[in-house]
Length: 241
Image (cartoon, rainbow, N blue to C red; front, side):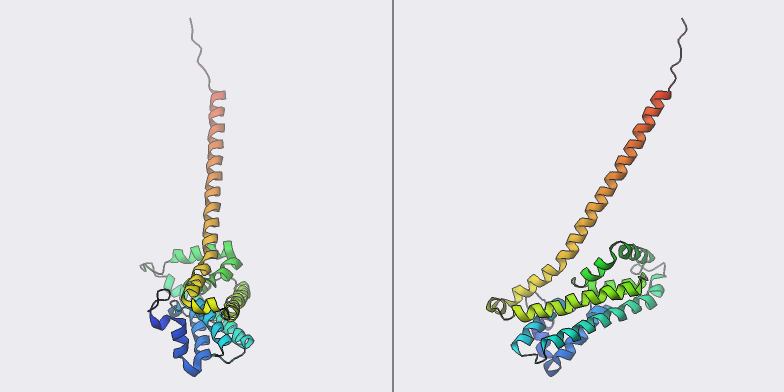
């Protein structure tokens, strides 16, 4: 068991080596599952892609880097397409049960609002966040996000994620420090992958706080205006002597 990556079978090096001659095929299937099937949320996509780049550089995967990147990008994109339609078809049945404590209709409404607000940024950023990249795909289908828009930015995110991390692993894997400290490097990749979402959450909270402050100021102004109006129209009764 590794400190950073949990059980040995989830260690990307162990996992890929275990696939033997079917390493690239297995890698493609794993990326597809993580991007499109809800059961694939636990798979270590980021570290797998980076490690795949290392293996290409070392010759363990004897397929050209460009072809590996193309295949992984296609699998990531197709996974998103499948996940979207799973959410679209199965979502209404799952989220229409009022007694359900997990699949609630309000989640669909919130998801729709989320996509309406963040749209393209949400799709691209979600690619780099473990677990989120799996569920956001189905939720896009549940929320009936515009397919053309969703698939366009899924493709952009797929290239940046699948090809980008593989290429990063290929070139950094030739650095001796990276080879000698692979576990720490993979842990750093996982941490860095959630940074964009942390930034978005902070921005969202600041925007919400700003909006609440504006509303409070508006209410205060209305109350002040009402008080001044009441003071100006108040009639003081005349005292007879």
